[in-house]
Amino acid sequence: MGNECWLQVQTAMRNIVGENAYTNWIVPLSLGGIDKGVATVIAPTSFIGDYVARSYGDNLKAEFAKIGESVERLNFVTKITTGAAKPTAKPAPQPKPQRTESDLPLPGAALDPRLTFDNFVVGKPNELAHAAARRVAEGRDVSFNPLFLHGGVGLGKTHLMHAIAHELKKRDPNARVLYLSAEQFMYRFVQALRFKDTIAFKEMFRSVDLLMVDDVQFIAGKTTTQEEFFHTFNALIEQNKQVIISGDRSPIDMEGLEERIKSRLQWGLVVDLHPTDYELRLGILQSKQEIQARQNPDVVVAPGVLEFMAHRISSNVRVLEGALTRLYAFGSLVGREITLEMAQESLSDILRATDRKVTIDEIIRKVTDHYGLNLTDMLSARRTRSIARPRQLAMYLSKQLTSKSLPEIGRRFGKRDHTTVIHAVKKIEELKAVDSQISKDIEHLRRILEG
Image 1 (tube, rainbow, N blue to C red):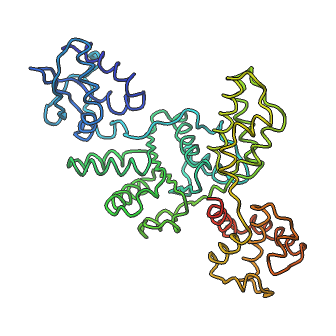
Image 2 (image 1 turned 30 degrees about the vertical axis):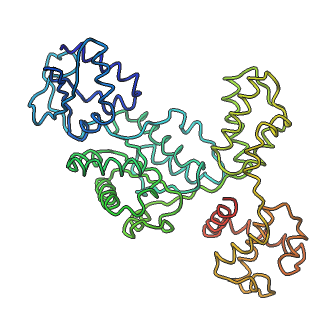
Image 3 (image 1 turned 120 degrees about the horizontal axis):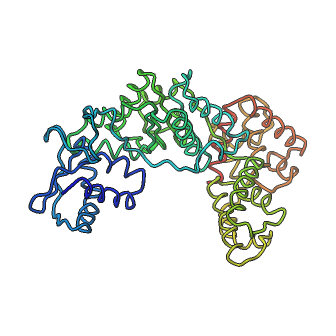
C-alpha cells in the first residue's frame, strides 16, 4: 500500500476526529505496511500508539476498508523497534533528522477560537485577572510564576487561559503551548503508568513553553497524580517556562491538595475572579448581542430587555449567554420582536432557578458560622471589631441578596435603626476596595447563600 493511500486514510480521519485531535494523534503516525490483514502503524512513542489504538482503532480499520484494504487488526509499533520509518508525506530531496520528543504533538484539549482577548469583556470584578493574563500572553518574562486563577463557575477562568494560548501562538507560532484540564492530565498519567510509558509522558509534558491546567481541584486527593503534577510544574518553572493553573477556590482553601503544592502555587500570583456585578453583566450581554445581531439581522431586541436580564440573571456568565442565545433563537423562529414579556416567558425556568429566596435569618446564620460567632453576639449591642465587622457584612449581604427594606433589615439585627444599615453597607463597600480578605469573604458567603 503506497503513501497516497495512507494519506487518504489520514485525511478521512481528520473529518472524523477534528483538527486538534488529527494534529495531535493522527499526523505523527506512518504506515509500515499491510500483511495478511494486519496493518503495522508506526508511532513516535508507545504512549501515542496505545492512545490511538484505544480511541480511534475502529475508525482507522473502517477507513482502510473504504479504500479497498481489508484490515482486521492494527499493530502499533514505535520507531525504536522498527528502525527508520518511511515518512507519510512525499519524500523530500534531503533526509529529515530523527524526530525528538520535543517535536512531538502535545496531547492537550482543543482551543476554542471564540475565547480570545477581543471577546473578553473587562470589568472591575475581573480586571486584575485580565491584566495578568495579558502580561503572560505578551511572551515576556514575568515576575509571577505560576499564575493561579480562581473563582466560581462561568466567571472567565477558562476564557482567559484560551485567550493567552491564542495570543502567544499568534506572537510566536513555534511556541509549544499545552492546555488541558486537570482531569485530562490525570487520565494521561494513569494511562502512562498502565502502559509503562512514564518516561515519554514526562518528556512530553516537560518540553512545553507554556503549560495551562484547568480546574486543578479535580486532582485533590489523588496522591500519585499530585506527585507527578508537582514535579512537572516544578521542572517547568526551574526552566523559566510559564505555568498557569485555575481552580474553583484559592490554593490555601482547597481541601485534598498537598501542602507543598499549595505552597508552590502561592509563590506566584494568585488572582481571584469575583462574581460579576450588574455593569459587567450588562457589558457582556451588549457584546454578545452584537455578535448575535450579525448572525440574526432580522431579530429585534426591545429596549430594556438586556437590562432586565443583567439584573435578574446573576448566577454566572454561561447562564447569561445561554439565555441570550435562547432569546435570539426564539425570536428568529417565531419572527417576532424580543420584548420584555417574551423574555420573561421564554426564560421562566432560568429566572426561577436564579430567584432562590435568601432570607436575612439564613444570612445571619451563615455569617456567624463563617466567623465563629454566636447569634447572641451578632444581635447584641457590642461594638468590638471582631463582632461589629461581621455584623456590618451581614447587613450588607441582606441589602444585596434580599428585597427587604432598610428598616426591616435594621429591625432583624437587634432592632437597629435604618441609618445603621446604611452606614454598614457604605463601610463594607469601602473596605471591599482596599481589603482583599473582605472581598473573599463576601464572595465565599455569596456562593454559599446563592448556591
